[in-house]
Amino acid sequence: MMENLDNSILNAPLIKVSPPGPKSLQILKQQEEYETSAINYPKYFKIAVDRAQGSTIVDVDGNVYIDMVTGISVINLGHNNPYVKSAVEEQLNKVWHTLEVPTEIRTNFSKKLLSTLDFKAKLLFTTTGADAVEAGVKIARWITGKKTIISFEGSYHGITAGTLGFTGANKYREFQEFFDNRVVKFPYPYPYRCPFKDCLNDVLSLIEYALSNPGYLGNDVAGILVEPIQGEGGYVIPPKGFLKGLREIADKYGILLIVDEVQTGMGRTGKMWAYQWEGIKPDIVCISKAVGEGIPLSMVAFRHDLDKLPTGFHLGTYRGNPLGLAAGLASLEFIEKYDILSRVQRLGNKILKELSTRISNQHVGDIRGLGFMIGIELVSDGKSPWSEGTKKVIDESLKRGLLVYKAGRWDNVIRLMPPLTIPESLLDESLKILQETLNDL
Ligand SMILES: Cc1ncc(COP(=O)(O)O)c(C=O)c1O
Image (cartoon, rainbow, N blue to C red; front, side, top):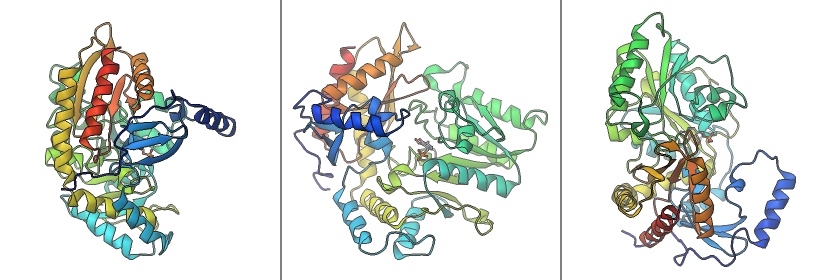
């Protein structure tokens, strides 16, 4: 295997001037003047980016950071991954936009992506993660002729009017919600904060009770929409058997299982798709984020035999952009060529072990993860969610040259989503910084 899988700046981090430096400050001020006050991320990362290489980002003041945010699980193979870049460059010289009129890159990508699923599927291209979720739900409703969707508390499926209805976390829904959307939300099995006796079976029984009771959900359920691991919800890993249980319930009641792999997919958990950890076959899979490695690309993969969709069932000008498809095909090839999945499994276990042994602070309530999807839940006074803590960790880490971000129903989970290609030396350095920051809390 290649020694260095990405072109990171290996002496990172390098802090020349405490962030935000003067040039960053100037650009941040301009952004504030030109853009809405609704912008989110610059309020956490007070820097302006000059360029990025592999697992490192350089700000306009010359500071070099190790990136454990990856644009929220998008840059899975490192910024400017040379293999992906040359595929995109090749496509740039051919054609950039063709609607759905096929190109070689489109069919090659489709064949490759479909070969990574464990069931015979077809693709419907979309433009964003939320669009993929909306299309997945639309397919379930169209095929079954039913309307209700089961989703989960704490979930995040996007911010469009439609997906806000399925998103369980209230904090995203307070701004707008599409009300004419039949959704019933159930608790997500959250082992660290489970109010039930049996976190897995009690949740499954509750769903089954609702489905078997004609006065509750009756016979109107089209689909169960679920994240295999909750992303924005706080990197919540359900007990083993959750997806299997949902699969059994879906089969029993003639419901389609829609798995939202927008954040968990493309190798992030150490399998190409997180549902593969449970050995199940979904009916519909929603895919986005890392599939385009930063070039917008998204799609729904759904059971081949469900393809009874009429012409123009789902539209969108930019669906299946050739540059994104080139990046997507190259990413799939790269993951296979360099056995990235084994690497993520091996190093993911190492990260968890190191964090658990090195970090000792009353504010660290839970450390959990699968592959390169690691969450550190911060608490105060026992188990109360501590959101101020995550803000402190993000700020302190930034000052020390490490980018980390938060998640969670209460914004109290530090989440680590490094590139799957991060050099081990940078991973060790990041863990050292995190250890210092967390132990200093
Ligand atoms: C699980 C999941 N589904 C859907 C989405 C929405 O994707 P997008 O922001 O591209 O609309 C996200 C985004 O974070 C996500 O994590």
